[in-house]
Image (cartoon, rainbow, N blue to C red; front, side):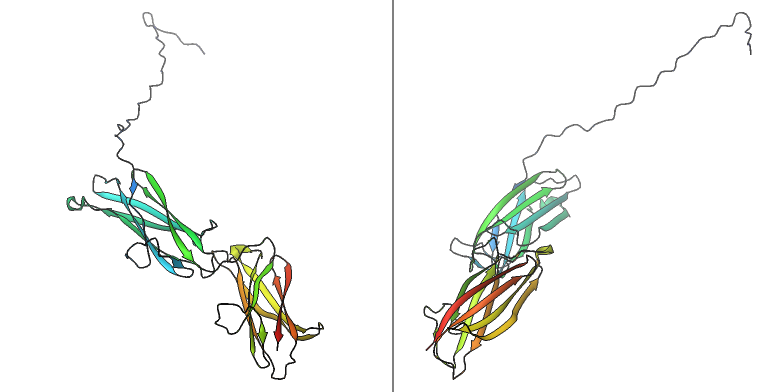
Length: 291
């Protein structure tokens, strides 16, 4: 197909070029303020109570309180303040005793509140079965407006009974006691016919399942000096549980009532522990005498 043009008319070719993209306006950089700062932490035995002194200690199973303040946080144009704080307690082995505690402070300040300082409060519970020693609270705060972060550590001491760990199933401290409440074991485990024999021990070195599950049981048997079995009880006690904190050992205890006509002679107690999760078994023997 052809086209004809009238005389005196000329065509001009136009090239359409893409327009340069308009530059996005960027906010002018603002001078950085002082870094976020955390006030001195306070660990107390009562809510809002005085901080622990150097001589004060917690006891395993006890609850405690923790607080710290924040300074140099950003205040928005409308007086808005948004801060997030965290705290978590660790035992002497570095194992967390509970999940991270998260706290949020969101508020708007007026001119009268210019000297206000936010303060984070938390409460923690020590496990009933845990090692003694120096515990640590790791804490931090984040300014959700300036995105600054600061962190710190606070230490405190805990008293309690300790049981040495083991790579495999082990029975520790099998000992005899005169009564159920005695704290000191008998140096010479000697009883009389008709007495009650108390035995206490600890089981450690078992394996954990999901969510720190524990599945431990123990059997008890008594034999005479000739090795003849006089008494036996399977699954005398069973510890089957799950918890956030991995229980480091399982305490065990039982009692035996001697008959009035028990022959005066040496005897042996056998404790056989079973770890169902780790497929482990171990036996420990302890001797006593009836005189």
